[in-house]
Image 1 (cartoon, one colour):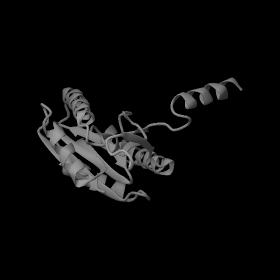
Image 2 (tube, rainbow, N blue to C red; image 1 turned 30 degrees about the vertical axis):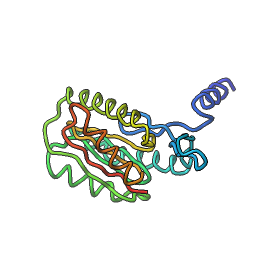
Image 3 (cartoon, helix red, strand yellow; image 1 turned 90 degrees about the vertical axis):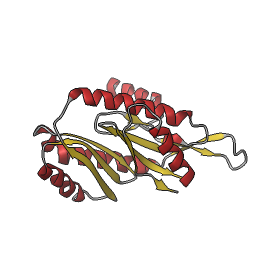
Image 4 (cartoon, helix red, strand yellow; image 1 turned 180 degrees about the vertical axis):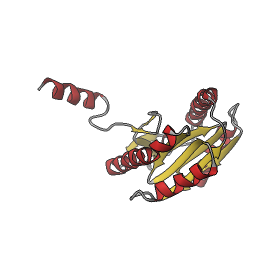
Length: 197
């Protein structure tokens, strides 16, 4: 009885049962987005993502990680980010065969709407991973600073100085997000995978 009460307490503390979705390294993206109120265009109101889409993305992330786990054990470093069924794969692989295997493995997963394989063939350096995490944090901060941008519905992934943006937004939001990411020191390029709404 005691473990159940601890779990329920933790669930309520984290948002009454709604947990953040996780990418491959366990970094959370919170399950809500900011929308402008029709009555007050300057005031932002909180709108939660549909729980079933959050669950679907988490299930796809788990399935993709499981499918790619053998690749990671073989000395590759692959990260998975999922948003609305769109699977983004970034990281470093040893050879083109590993890169091709990623595509075929992920196409087998039911519920995947699109696969973007942005892995590169190269050697793996641990210092690059730390640098990428720092750049990703700075890009997130820049997106949040952009007052007219609903940045909470944008997922960010970083690999070797390249920023990948996923999510939905107006064409103005897509442009603002790209410019905000490009302005961060250390960003070599921005790949915008956002869908205009």
